[in-house]
Amino acid sequence: MAYDVYKIRELFPMLRKDKTMQGKPLVFLDNASTTFKPRSVIDACSSYYEEHNSNSHRGDYDLAYDADMMVQKTRDTIAKFLNCDSREVVFTSGDTQALNLLAYGYALKFLKEGDEILLSIEEHASNLLPWFKVAQLTKAKVSYIPLNKYGQITVQNLKKALSSKTKIVSVAHVSNVLGYTVDIKEFAKIAHQFGAVMVVDGAQSVPHSKIDFKDLDIDFLTFSAHKMCGPTGIGCLIGKYDLLDRMDSFSLGGGMNVTFHKDATIEYLNPPSKFEGGTLNLSGIYGFKAAVEFLMDLGMDNIHAHEVELQEYALKRLKGYKNIYIYNAHARGGIITFNIEGVFSQDEATLFNHKGIAIRSGLHCAKMLPEFLGVPSTCRASFYLYTTKEEVDAFVDALINGGDILDAYFS
Amino acid sequence: MPISLDNNMMRAIIMDHYSNPNNKHQPLNDQFVKIHMHSDNCIDDLDIFLLVKNGVVEDACFDGIGCTISTASTDIMCDLFKGKSIKEALYIIEQYQKMVHEEEFDAEVLDEALAFINTSKQAARIRCATIGFNAAEMILKGK
Image (tube, rainbow over all chains, first blue to last red; front, side, top):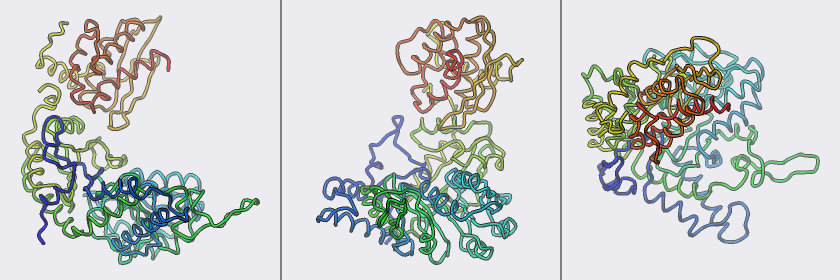
């Protein structure tokens, strides 16, 4: 069946035709930040509160059993989506918490002085700061895979940066600023040869392309539901079971222990439960399942092809404008990072806002990247499965026609 | 300055203070009080410096990275403050804050800062338009 973006849009309340911003039709191109939710996800979230409200793990009655089943079914759905075992699916509040769980639950336990954590300067803060903290606590060292001249992280540069001291390699599968895809399968293979575990921040890849956890042979994968049509406040750490089993929990309390004693000993549940202390975000889990099903129905390959088509279309239209600088023309995906000569990124974003177009300006949480790009900040437009050619046209027209940045205040 | 500033004049004032900010430089000596400001959601990253002697703001300047709105508004603020008592400067800040939040305000004291009267049209930029004023308020109130 052909991919009909207009039919798909009808499923999203936020994409209704009368939705405006600054009095103009809303064009949402900040999908790398967060995405809109289809009706099925919104309904699934409210169905928890309206039909199924009870706690998981805790009750002997039918309602609680249903909640338990739903948590399990959501794990199963995610496991099928990513080709992993459902026992390898740990619920977190999102990508950031998943990376923090790894830092505190894995790295803090196993790293020692002199060990190295290998990252890149284009990582999002969530894939840097937890490692910085662990490095401080363990006296391990943080080092960086050099970027090539396009800003890509290559296998060649990984090899140069690895050493026998490297214990963890953690990079984004797709950069949230430049949109480049890292050859993760090869990365994992090489990292394993050096005895390091491979952590992949999937925030910008899981929502946009087919991911096969087993085939990639990575050790850990993290992502957030809200960037893939799901609710906010829920996400995942996927980990190889034996590694999850060896890791410590970072959040202790109810629902994650078997028993505990006066002498302060604790017996933990098995993964994934041992990481999920406290009441889970159950409404989020209901919605998460609906979101994954929504994406699987559309087909990840179709989604990716749609985004690449939009990106190629936009780049073709933007070709030849000397005052528009595109930083990631070599990437293949729905992220376009740019600046207009002489215009501060935030002023540009405000002008877009004035035209009803939502784009992002600034550092996109990758605060070490500007030194590489040589500019203090950039603008970013990011497409998703529901973005249309007409929206790309609106974006390109706004970019080409420009206008005085103060139009936003005075017209 | 009359409140009947037209849009073109306001645009010209903002662009002039953005393109040629005469107060954007490091302080002349170490007697200035400095406060570092950065926005939570953007990259405005400014140092604000005030020289206060005997209850009077003798000089004001700023330096760093900022968008059009934060740069121009802070530059104009520095002009407004020079020679004003702390009390007068705080009154200017109060009136300016009222203006950008669409409350009734005393236009007499704001002079070129009136150019930011439309800031609320772009609500996300209120933080830019007030970053310098917020810094100055902290310095003047000793926070």
